[in-house]
Every structure is written in structure tokens, then in C-alpha cells.
Length: 245
Image (cartoon, rainbow, N blue to C red; front, side, top):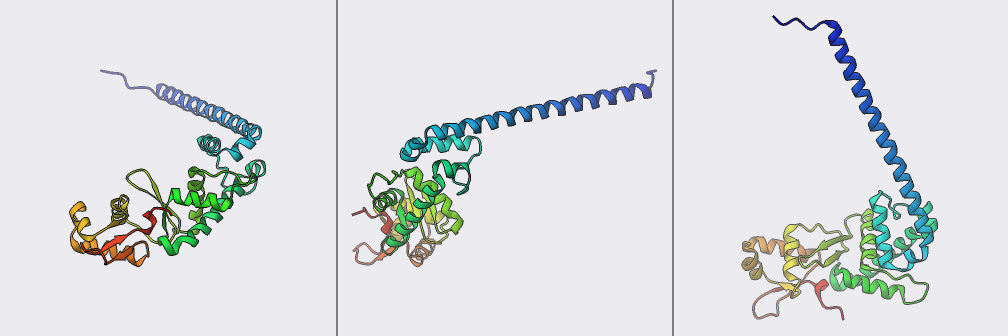
């Protein structure tokens, strides 16, 4: 018959488990402290890098994009605040604030033509035109415009980026909720700039009622124009997909 485990053995086992637990906590704390020190060192090196390459970050869009990606790896957002080291050293907060204001101005000025929907490339071109070509004006890239638009989300759902199937982006600057059906229609129209109820039925397999409901909503939001002059039937045009002239 097996002898029962004594109290001494039980206490010894509990003591060993407690020691292992304490040692594990100690190791975890040491690792956390080590990681924290490495992160602080990385941030210090990043600040030194920013100080040494200030002009490149401000003037070279591609260099600026890579710098933003480096910041993201350690959770640093130079655009998060208009104050502090990044704003004082690089002026990036002011830079993207300035682009954001110009984006709003361009979108407001073109809403009567495109209904509040335009390609990211066209928006970039118009922002560059607004900024001018003076030596003082920093060059702006697609990445800069996209970052500025994301910061404009604090104004509500009026500024949204929609990615098309071909990889391009459309910028929505009116407060309208676009669901998956609306996005499907937008993708269909990216080649010709227009769709029809029949095309939606044939290519997407939708019922006529569903197609009309989706298009009626887009018409109400001012994102599409109705063309009843075509012999094949009513066409719905996206002015934001018109070639920029």
C-alpha cells in the first residue's frame, strides 16, 4: 500500500512552485525593463536621425514616407500633436494641417462638379496647384495627402478613402455612408465612368429593384448624374471619374 504524502512534502512542493513563480515574474520584469530601455534608445536615435535629416524629411516626399514608417514601428505619431519635439523640430504637424486645409478647399470648390467624389490623383494635382511651385512650398506626395485625409476623420465621416479594384483610391468629401453595394457600383464604373440598371443586373446579378434602390441613393447624395439622352436607356455617370480637363 502506497504511503500517503506527508504535510512536509506538500509544503515543500508549494514552496518550490512559489519560487518558480517568483523567478518567472522576475524574468518577465527584467525582459520588460530591457525592452523599455531598447525602445527609449530607439526613440532617442530616431529623434537624432530626425534632427540630422530635417531638411530631407521636409522637402523629400519619399524620404518623409520612409521616416513615417520608421516612426510607426515604435508607436510614434509625429502628427498626433501640434506641440512637442516633432512639431518644433520638423514642423510636420503644421505641414499636414496645411495640406488638410488645402484638401478641404479643393473639395469644396469642386463639389458642384464631382458631387464630392474625386480620384486621389486628381486631388493631389489640385493641391499641388494650390500650393504653387515656389521654393518655399514643400512638395506633396500621394502618401502625404492620404495621411492628411486620415487626420481629417476627426471632422466626421465627410472625408473617406475608397480603394477600387484596380488599386486606385477615390476621395469622398461629403458625409454619405457608402455600403458594399455602392462600392461595387463604383468599381464597375471605373472604366467608363458610368453604369446602367441593366449593366448592374447583367454583371452583378442584382434584381432590378436592388439596382434602382442603390442608384437612387447615389443620386440623392449627389454622387452621380442621371443621363436620359442615351438610346440604350438611362445612364448614371460618376463625375468624379471624368477625365480631368
